[in-house]
Image 1 (tube, one colour):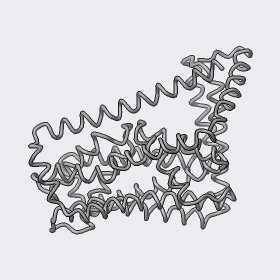
Image 2 (cartoon, rainbow, N blue to C red; image 1 turned 60 degrees about the vertical axis):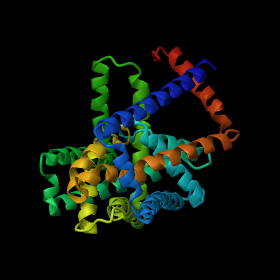
Image 3 (cartoon, one colour; image 1 turned 90 degrees about the vertical axis):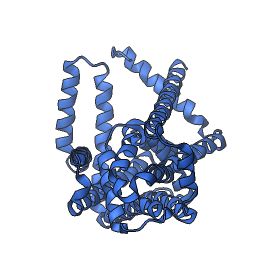
Image 4 (cartoon, rainbow, N blue to C red; image 1 turned 30 degrees about the horizontal axis):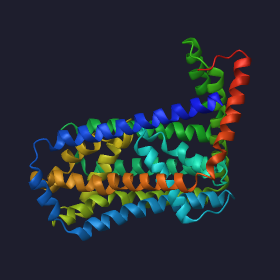
Length: 370
């Protein structure tokens, strides 16, 4: 069981590092923003807001997660997998959100979500495919809406913000192109992966053969997604359409905060466009939850709407409703799930034993294991 212990230790260490990085970024961000702020004045501003609009924002964010859960549930059903309740799907969504929030570029969410789905007898391949289609729809939606809002509201990109927009849009666009290439062109993907692997070998990176095996498995999963999309075109477009609705819901939250302060002068479309442009800028950056960047750019984009006096409070409420509150809620769900399902997930040790055997076989074949 030596590899089991090593795997657990490494997993725990990664978790601790990610949480510490997450908390550290939050501390630095809010210290920098609020270091010159009169805290009593800020608290008075927050107390004065219309609570019903804040509650509407909280409920809209819940609808955002419910829409994602419903989308994944429908794709799984189309794949012929086990029918899960909307509450189970919502649980998986929250678990994925939490691990996305604490890992750079949200890389940890989907693998963990797939893991927990497989522990409840959902096919790993189907779970991966459902989340991949959700991600594909998410990229298409954010890029489309963000670009349209930038075109029709070019004033939002003044004072150098256009370069942030170009960077964020480019990162997300490249990610989408790579994703679609992997899905629809198996040959191109294999050529790209072989080129990448040759570079690794030239630099004498260890365990390239193991890495190649994982890439080949990933290519097969993407190819399966291509087969599903081609044979379920209507279901795929429905899934993408639902993601558009999901994104519209998310981008509506700042307007609720705007109305909570009793402000007028900017329409729903104006505030919606501000959020769409902001999210396009920050969503592809390799920071947990885009912490620091989201808050800073919020202050620059939304300053014209909220004014200098209310701006910090508006940022705190908007990010609190759309991110920090649900990080706490998702953490609670992760803990409850871990406690209540501990007896169900006990077979993880059996999986670790199999990994240990595979690693032993690899070592015996002369491949150095890290």
